[in-house]
Length: 258
Ligand code: PEP
Image (cartoon, rainbow, N blue to C red; front, side):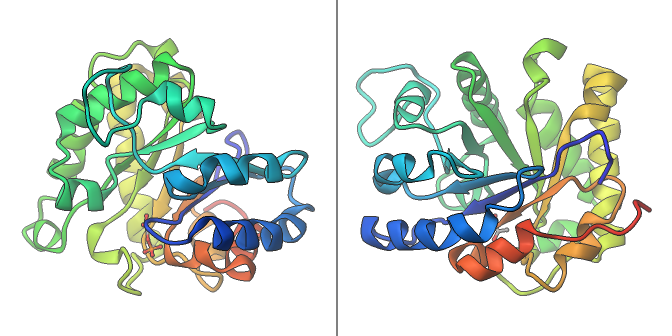
């Protein structure tokens, strides 16, 4: 974590929680995070709970995000939701290109790029997920994969457009598996991502861009991860469903940046 970049902890609830369960979780989370104004804390419930949860967050330290979006403004796209609709529901953030969407719903880097541009057009903050599979890691092509995801996913953006973007480095083999990348390995890839962004958009954008780590982040590993120089936050899946765990992650203690 770099002192110039505000740490951002986001919870991806995935396809969990009815509206009633979402209300309960948010009501538990608000007092547990009230003492953390210097952190950006985001929850991303399912679409169905967004409008119900939004008014509960007023005056709290918690912001609202969505887990996916379509790139068109409106039209005959059955089942899809536009960036403007998410803004209307009270979202400020949108997760784009999560590995589960890439794996199960044929999300491509080109579609990530379309969604990113549509999200920026309505001034919401995109959280762009990238990460390699276990077989890609074992084949030694992690950096090739990440570089492709970043170069196509963030293609054709001006530095001005890119200022708000958050990247989440999520090695697929660490998501929901209990296996976490070591802080050193995760930091090395986050530094590589920053270098790739430098080449595309310049040093100033790359230095200010927040890069999260995601993949089995828990209360007992967040402190070490966030103490790494290029990790500026976490995208949390499973542990974001339990108020005490997510609040503890948001309340991380960073040791001196390495
Ligand atoms: C995720 O879904 O983005 C994620 C990182 O999940 P988990 O924390 O459960 O590994």
